[in-house]
Image (cartoon, rainbow, N blue to C red):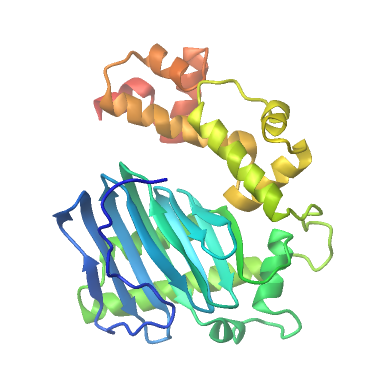
Length: 326
């Protein structure tokens, strides 16, 4: 459970809310452990746009409501969770992920941000019927495309996640940099929002109709919770040399379901996810403590400093020592 001040108190989030077309800054400045801002705007095409660029020092929790909506969330940094109140499950928006959510009915839940987290994200909300009008075929619904991509078939919240393609990442970065201060800014945001939607729909429609690439393992709610527990175990013990077999055994899940689950819920393989969190933790340690590079490597699970340095350079673009001097 995340502790801290509820700095979003009184902010009702709804897919059908009335939003000023001129744009609005919901939170800004530095207050209650919150540094940065959350801004929103309604585009001419009916897209509800939100820009998140803030640092949460103490953690955030806020009741959240999704009306029937299609959401595209591009998370460039940070991790945010949406815990559904009525379905007992959650969607995690992790850094470097593009998350698609289709809600066919109102969903109540809790939006949670951990403490000491920098969040940079773009969220686009479209009316599902408006999006389906852009699909090239009427034989498959928007929900049908997402079910095909995720390997799940259910009502309520249907989430799909995948690593952010570079073209979408660049568009999201431009949107955060531009903001929504002026009329011209809003026009740019409109164009970029529709361009992101076009890339996402192309990705959905490019999925083969045959079942060859559709996940054959459909995870139950119980299995998805076990996958989430495996993820929690892994990221809280980064110095441990996890194997897929050992991780699967620890949560009572077979290896195939664990691997499929990580792909569906976190958009990457088990090892890619582990490496990402290790590299993020290593960067935090190098930035905030005086431990030697060798000690940092050991603390995030690398017994060989040379191998650690190689992986770190591939991930961050510079060596650990160079990173510390930046």
